Length: 71
Image 1 (cartoon, one colour):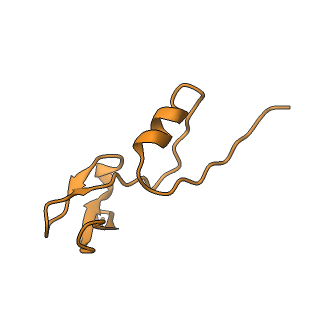
Image 2: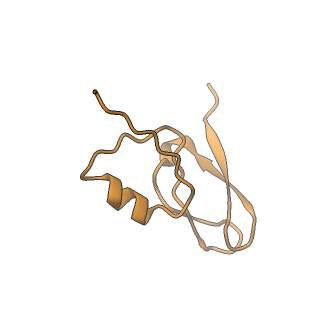
């Protein structure tokens, strides 16, 4: 079975970096310029009122949010 990986573009030098799927949510380093890569999330993250603000303030990429209420 093939190992899943994703490409993340370095924000500093533009180099594409292959990130293994099991490294989801972890910051990495560019293989070319060694700059910090943003964490990759390929699955939706379920947040609540306690974790939402912290996630939004610490994540440097775009965020798509879906809000739901039982009423």
